[in-house]
Amino acid sequence: MTHVVIIGGGPGGYEAALVAARLGAQVTVVERDGLGGSTVLTDCVPSKTLIATSDLLTEVESSAELGVEVPRDVRADLAAVNDRVLRLALAQSADIAGRLDREGIEVVRGTARLLSAREVEVVEASSSDQEASGAPRVVEADAVILATGAHPRVSPDALPDGERILTWEQVYALREIPEHMIVVGSGVTGAEFASAYNGLDAHVTLVSSRDRVLPGEDEDAAELIEDVFRERGMTVMGQSRMASVRREGDQVVVTLTDGREVVGSHCLLALGSIPNTADLGLEDVGVALDDAGFVRVDRVSRTSVPGVYAAGDCTGVLMLASVAAQQGRIAVAHLLGDAVHPLDLQKVSSNIFTSPEIATVGLSQRAIDEAGLHVDVVMLPLATNARAKMQGVRHGFVKLFSRRGMGVVVGGVVVGPRASELIHAVSLAVSASLTVDQVADAFTVYPSMSGSVAEAARSLHPR
Ligand SMILES: Cc1cc2nc3c(=O)[nH]c(=O)nc-3n(C[C@H](O)[C@H](O)[C@H](O)COP(=O)(O)OP(=O)(O)OC[C@H]3O[C@@H](n4cnc5c(N)ncnc54)[C@H](O)[C@@H]3O)c2cc1C
Image 1 (spheres, rainbow, N blue to C red):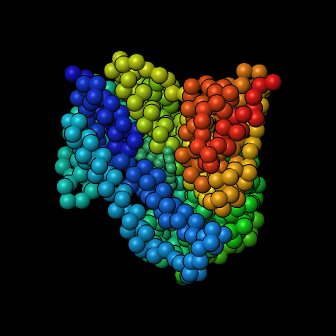
Image 2 (image 1 turned 135 degrees about the vertical axis):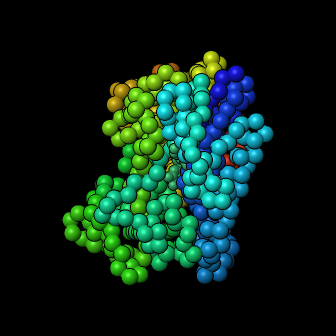
Image 3 (image 1 turned 45 degrees about the vertical axis):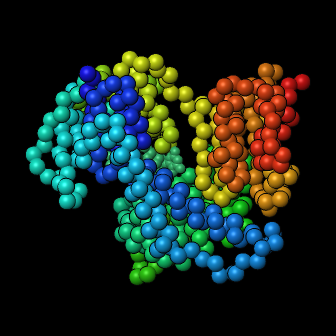
């Protein structure tokens, strides 16, 4: 029986473990903090739970348009919200533990490092707390999967104190809605939290070092969300690079590189992630890392050392829970000799959970331009959609990209409420290489937002 040892119990690790067990391997998962990893305990699940409350309040704001008078002082009780966030995260982690247990997977609570490609040193945590206890033991493995994730980047000039200067892992300790939250960093994480706290009725300043928010995302979507942010009272500061953050009593002061200062009650640092690859023994074993410390992998999750695979954020391939899980599954299929489908990033769908949401799949406009592809594009505002009008939805669009001549759908962007759900139709089309005619021919419900996906496809009918 092949013994697979997996270091890290996030989606990269636990999905690999489940597939490996089903394929008949003996599986050991070593996890330091809790099953589900950062995804479940500090990042994805907690942030989306917080956003669920923020979305509800944002919807309530527009209730007057739908003929419902709601008292003006509707406010979230952040202590209750954050208690719920943490409860749900722990429950999700327990669910995953239950699944692994039912599949006969051994889970060791502790910290692991590689001694060789076939030997993993494990220092188990004591049962009472998370401190390491006891002598390290060595676990023999036929194959190892590294799925150790990443942690928030901080700067020596902006050190979190856990009270007012915060990483995204620390915000759930807040008991009251911040009066003025300064979010530094306007990538996906910064934009999501800025949107969330804006929805929770905090004053929000979003400090962005670039011209616009969400650099790297679809330009029309980024422009739309920046307009919506401003319309909702958020202060968006473009071309503003943070130099330092300091605390002054009950205030935080963010100093920009041009000397300007922004004063608020709290500051959330969203400066990107650093891979958890230090102290893993990787250099000694010969596992190649890139300059930023990410594990180099190929499309079937192999590292530079035979028998050692890597999945998820520690590889930096595309920092999404869904990609981590897929890389883990692919690693297992490869190492156990099952049918392998190499990772195809052109089929990944992802979502930015701002309000409205921004969902994308397949080729982006930038990728199309860089590759010089002949592609037709259509962008249909949701404002023309009957269901959107009924629901008071004013912001959003459906954008589709199709190969000129053949009409094969190669990508799409949906901006709107629940765009994360709407994108699935486009994702199916991209994944199955459907033509715009096939997408347009499939019935959609009338009235429905998905009607706009079909209508966009119809307007791209090859002539
Ligand atoms: C705020 C935020 C929101 C996000 N929202 C989304 C989203 O909505 N959708 C989405 O797809 N992605 C989202 N992501 C990204 C997603 O969280 C990551 O891509 C995902 O966590 C990667 O999973 P992973 O398995 O690689 O790592 P992780 O989930 O980080 O798990 C790694 C685990 O390894 C453990 N570990 C590390 N070193 C060791 C060691 N030496 N020994 C034992 N254990 C170790 C850690 O304790 C950790 O539990 C979000 C990220 C952030 C920061």
